Image (cartoon, rainbow, N blue to C red; front, side):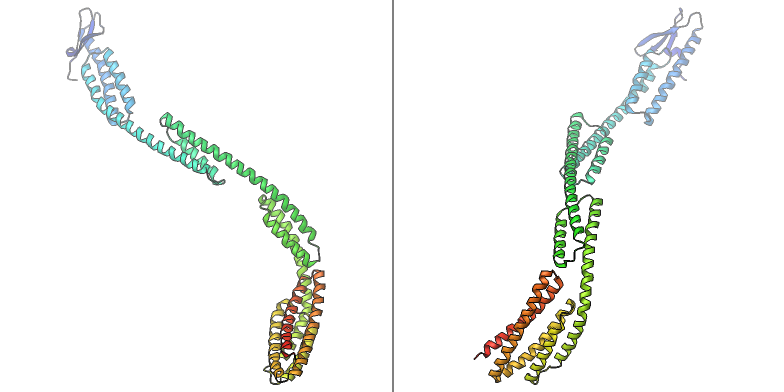
Length: 411
């Protein structure tokens, strides 16, 4: 040290030790019956310890290793220590070193306040967004993801620092109210859904019972229509709980499969029986198509009548063959009738007689088909009903044409 203790203190003859400062001197202790130089050296050692403390504080503040507020408090405490220190040394220099720290601390405090203010603004904006997101959820129907989203928003709120109390309380009120609204609406939604599912379960259980009761029926037509009605009612019933809905559907579907499987087996037997009829009609169709092109109207007419009689006697064919066979046979009939029409125009009396005979034959055939149709409808034989209606439609078309021709030839 360059300073000498005597420069900053003295010892009275009575042993009182003083320290000198810019504001004057003050007593720092007693050193009775001793060497004044030894006394000053002792109190200088104490000063050196205080100087080390000031030096350490100065280093920490300059390095930024202590917070501005903590630094300000340390400077204040150290200044108070210096003011009351029982030491001898340049206390004014130590105070000056402390004073040099004040602008640094003040700037850092200002920077800290600005940083905190910015964070508060960010936190306020974040909380406003959280409140707005919660309010949007409260008005939505996102019942599955909404609850998880609200939990995430709550955690995000907790992670943010507090802002000014009025704003914080107002935003929290918005957020909390939105959560309450959403929770209440969600609870109501699932309550209503539960009631609807219970109602759907009751309806579908009854429908499954009905389906199972019908599964052994052999009244193919009426029961098939009943199953279609059951399916319509099933679709209109809504959904039960997933596992319950699947179990009820399994019962319903199994009953349907049992009935329609039996019906398909029965129809397969019928188709097998009708397959022979289809073979016969294919042979007759080949015979009829060999009449084309018609060169002799009378011969073609007589031959076709014979074929048509055998065609009717052959009986029903499987539905898959009906359209093709009937369509091709009708084309032959039209060609023969066209040729016959030309002949009738040349021989009106004979044409009239033939037309009368054709009309009568077709009327008789239609009467027989209609009688068969009535029996099939009464028995609920849907497949037979369809076949007979197709045959009646074809015969009716022929009869209409024959009747038209007969009317044209009427004397």
